[in-house]
Length: 334
Ligand code: 8DG
Ligand code: CA
Ligand code: CA
Image (cartoon, rainbow, N blue to C red; front, side):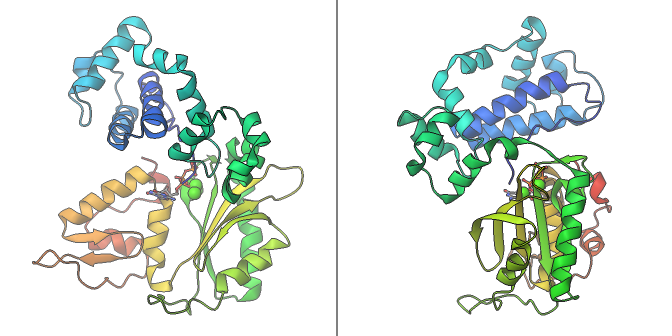
């Protein structure tokens, strides 16, 4: 998951509320580590961002699904004073600010950030001096801190896509490659590059059985000469790393996953997102008696136990099975 998500929707008339709600949600996730509050603020921000009418009072907001007493009070406070006490306090809190800052480094989560701040490391410059406190992922995140915060224009991802297609299909024309994430949803600017790859011969690995003939490693080796600059982590099915198209462009975060062919469309759906769209679709699947995840769609039997995965040969089929109106990737930007 790429960091720093600020869903700014085009023409969002409630953007001012969304901004403070997102900031509060980030605070809850990174500093308080209260995932429930994080989710509550995120949900409220999403609801307000998609609400067509400008909200004029906390009471009016309270009527929307996902906005309760506390958030409606904050909306009133903001409408009356133009600011929020809670946020003012957070801005004054040096430690909280330091924790938030450090979590912006790829590989540093809230727990690690708090630990570093407790040890007195409170800035990016500090971290650069004490890299022995960091693991491999965090060192790479720090090295490319400024670049990783830059959004990637879709025209650049398109070129990365072309390079990957060309290199990988030169190994074997039967590889299928899909760049997912916000790029597939048509966004003009993206946080990172999420690539899925499959091949008819890639079957589900059974537990403890040795994996896929190092297929992913062969693909990465091929891309190492032209595109990939660092490896953050490398497993049998998931590569996390860094790429750069030319030396004039920034370094970019790149993830490549090798997916068994029978799971491909569920994976493409899942990794296209958005995360809110996925949540809604999974909830709908459950109402229809199915359980949907990044691997499969399975009917839930009368005993409540999921059955065998439904065979799936396209993304559309998943929507059909659960009677969910098909949405093109560009329509999934919830
Ligand atoms: P961005 O990179 O431009 O910020 O947006 P994104 O492409 O939508 O987000 P992402 O963090 O790269 O995740 C890609 C998709 O993966 C996302 O749209 C939906 C799916 N996804 C979830 N939950 C999670 C999760 O917890 N971790 C990861 N890695 N992906 C998730 O729905
Ligand atoms: Ca990602
Ligand atoms: Ca992404």
